[in-house]
Amino acid sequence: MHADVSAELWKSATWVLDTGRANRPARTSWDIAVTSIGFAYTDPARAWGELRGLFEAQRPDGQVPHQTFIPGYAQRPARPVSPPLHAVAAWEVYRRSAGHGAAPLRHALAELDWLYPRLSAQQEFLTDEVENPGFDAILGAADLALAQIAGALGRPSDADRHRDRAHAVTAAMVRRLWDPATRTFRSRDARTGESGPAHTAGGLLPLLLPDLPGELAEAIVDEMASERFGLPVRTGLPVPEHDGTRRGPIRIDLNWLLCRGLLVHGRRAEAEQLRAAATGLVHANGHHAGYDPDTGEGIGPSSDERTAALSLDLLADRSAPAYARA
Image 1 (tube, one colour):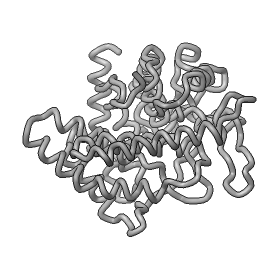
Image 2 (cartoon, helix red, strand yellow):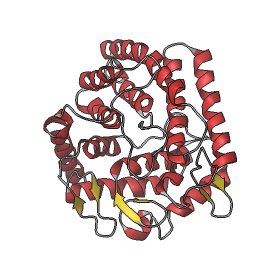
Image 3 (cartoon, one colour):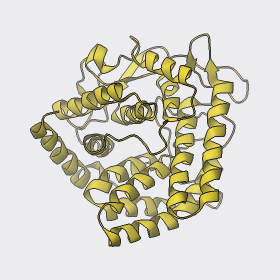
């Protein structure tokens, strides 16, 4: 992306975060996790405040309140909760803060120290029988982020515990949710054991996990490039939602996760294509919650704080997560 275009997008995304929907009192915990990643660039104190405010209301059993389904690709029918992106967000805010000198680093470590037991309690509450590839992939990524946090806090045994649990989640997903016939991950009904639809956007998200066998990661990339989804090299647009039957809107949060997954598995060229398509789409059409999968036209108001927050991260950071596959 041309420098002038990047600067324009950065300016508009910052404006949306400062003045748009992010100032609404009623938001989901997914909104808070995502927007804190954006505030890490523009206002780190607010990023920590967003996360702290959410976890101050955490229930004794570890559940974080005000959680809702993430439409389309991360839905668990049994419990109305959002996937736990908060540990990933906390680690990303820490990474940004740590690069600004000794005082911000001390403050960031203090915030991590306060958040860590609460993030761990949330993880314990949500860890259950593997049944949905989108949700459980984010759950595994959260444990990998918690391992990074525990390491930064000098808790190596806790870091090992989180890595072991992420590995166990990956193994369980491969064993229970991978369908060799369709070469996709499929959800499983916890009551009946029946598989959900194949070829959904949620089935792409296990790419976030570095322990995923190489041949399965390759199959996911092939699925992303198929006519159902279409990587930018095929369509010029980011990857849309898909419920197994039809294409849904393009969402920047889905594409942000997929960029991370591609980087985890060393697919830098595809990640860069997807990053450029996502940021180009937002620059051309505005900060919408969704975009038409065929035309790229924005859907709804052009002041979505999640899109703005992740646009900043897509512009600023092209590095692979620390736990990426070697």
